[in-house]
Picture (cartoon, rainbow, N blue to C red):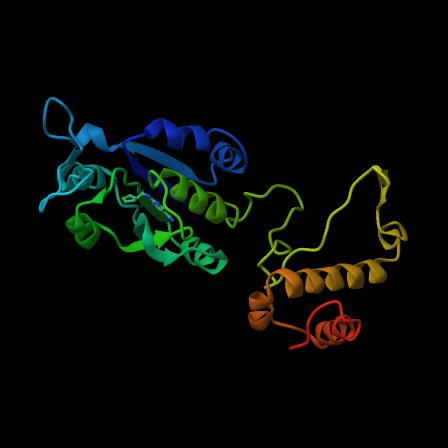
Length: 248
Ligand code: 4GN
């Protein structure tokens, strides 16, 4: 899978790509990344990428021509590709959208700066507009990095060894159970005894219970959409009976 980033701050994107899971995926040849400097496609000696807004007002707007030129310079991979504009006005990014995006051969991220980009870029260039959450960033680069990380870890082989993303928070529709490693006692807090018992069935049930308890307490909205087994329903009924979480 190929990821392209169109930005006026290529160094910001390269820094993110240089370490961690994404960097390993590039080394292994599982993904390839290309960072394109929009400024290289400005038409004037000053390499201008922004201009004053028609109609007046504060702030600057990104000019359409440099972005259009940068986009044309990016080869479209034979198969399926998507041009994604990162903006607070986009469709909200979540784990389901990450899976959807992972089906493409190429994702091209349009990272804007300033007060906004010329509306005709949105109209002519973007296949979709995506937001990583209800807050404003100074540029689309961090949002593109977030989407890239979430999508890359879904590509087979990117998470090494036996590590699977199927147990991650959200994949089963629930929050994850708590994790512990050595030491057995830390600052007076003991690792739950069941995890030391060696009884795999008991451990599995404890983890499921903690997952359900956490989701119920913190994200009851997720629980409504989760696929629950008969055992899950029993566990939830028991938690409610003990008054730990509120009844439906
Ligand atoms: C994306 C981009 C927030 C998000 C952004 C988000 C840069 N802020 N919530 N800022 O995903 C106007 C043009 C603002 C670029 C954009």
